[in-house]
Length: 599
Image 1 (tube, rainbow, N blue to C red):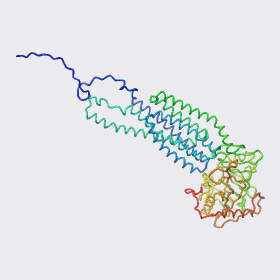
Image 2: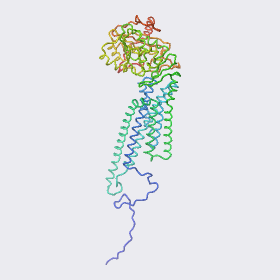
Image 3: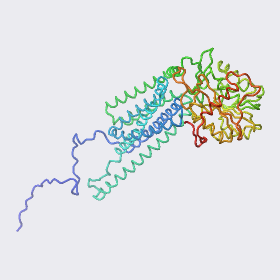
C-alpha cells in the first residue's frame, strides 16, 4: 500500500554567517554608526604622502641646524669663548630634544594640527632668536641666560617633530594597506580557518617592518637636511644675509614648509576649526618675520648705538668679523673687533710702545709682525731707520683696508701701510709660518706678536707651544720675540701659562707689564668695557720678551731709540718687578691638543 505523500511548505532557517560553510550571508544595510566617515586611502596615496613628508623633514632639519649654529655663532661673538658656548648650546638642545619627544606623545591623537603648531612656534622662536639675543646683550648687558632659554625652547620643538611626523606617516600607510585584511579573510570564501589565522599572525610583522622603514626614511631625510643646513649657514646665509636676517629668512622657510604640509597633504585630518586656527597662526608668524626683516637694519643700528655709544663712525662686516670705529672727527678713534675694544685711541701708545721697543734693543733690520692689522705696531717699528723690511701677517684684509682708508685710523698709524718698507701678507699666521722656514732665505731679527688675548678662543692656537716653535725656526740666533700675553694682574694664570709655553718651546723669557689709564683691551674671553664706562677692561697689559736659548734677555731700550711718551729704562725695570710679583707655581705649557688658557 502506498502511503499518500503530502508536500510541506519550506521552513525558513536562519544560519550563522561565519560558522557554516555554504552560501555567504546577505550583506546587511550599513547603519549610520557603522559607516566610515572617509574612504580609506589607497596604497598609492600612502606613498604619495610619504614623499612630501620626507621633503618637509629635510627642510625642517636644515632649519633646525641653522637655528643651532646661529645661537652658537652669536653667543661666541657676544659672550666669547666659543668652546664653552658651543658646549652649552649643544648639550642643552640635545637634552631638550629628548623632552620634546616625550611631550609629543600627548599630541599623537591630533598629530596633524600638533605638527602644524610645533612648526609655527619653532619658526617664530628660531627666527627671532638672534634678534632677542642681540637685544638682551645691547640693552641688558647679559645674554647667557637668553642663550640657554632659546636653546631649551628650540630643542623641545625640534624633538617633537619626528614623533608627530612618524604618526602621520603610519596613519597614512595604515589607512592605505597596513590595516586592511586580505581578500576573503573571515568570509568563508576560498579561505579556511588556518589561512585566516596565518594572516592575522603575519599582520603584526608587516606592521613592524613598515614602522622600521618609516623610521629609517625619516632619520635619513633628517640627517641629510642637517648636512645641507650646516653647509648653508657659513657659506650662504652668513655672507649674503648676515646673522639677523639669515635667522628670519630661515624661520619663514620653516613655517611655509610645515604649514604647507599640514594644510595640504593632511587637510582631511583637520576639522574646519583646526584648519582656520592653523592658517591664522601661520599667517601671523609670517607677518612677524616679514616685519622684523624689513626693520632689521634699524634695529641693528639702534643696538649698535646702545653697545658702542652714539659716536659710531664706521661699522662694516668683513668676511671674518664685525669692525666698528667710534669717536669724533677730531678726537682719537676707538677700534672694536667683534664687539671687543682692540684699540683705544687715547692711550694705545702705552700698549704699542711697551710691545715693540724692548724687542728693538739689538739688530732689527728685518721685522715680522703677527697680527697688527691696525698698523700701530708697524708705526712704532718704522720709527727706527735701521728697520729696512717689515712684514705684517694679518688674517683679515678688511682691517688693513680700513686702517689704510679711514682718515682717523690712518692718521693714528702715521700712514704706516704707505711706507715702502712694509709688506702685508693676508694669511693665517700659523699656516704661513709653517711653510715660511723652508721658503725664506733669511731669518727675522725681531718677531712681534700683536694678537688678542689668548683667552679669546680663536687666537688660542697662536699661543701654543707648536706656534712658538714655528717662530723659533724663523728667528736669527740673536733674534728677539715680543709677545702680548694678556693682563698680569687680572688673569695671572693665563699670563704665566704663556710664559711656560714659551719656555717649553726653547725660549728664555723676561716678563714685564705696562699700566694704562684705561687700557680697554679684552684681557679674557669676556667683552671689553663699553664706551659708557659701566664695565672696565683690565688695569694693565702683560708682555713677555723671549730669546732662543737658556739665558733671559736684558730688558731695555736701543741706544738710538726714538723719544717715547710712556716708556723709559726706569719704567721697564719697575714693570718687570710688578710682573714678577704675580708669579706663582709652575704651570704646564699649552699645546694644540691640550689648550690651557681660560683660567
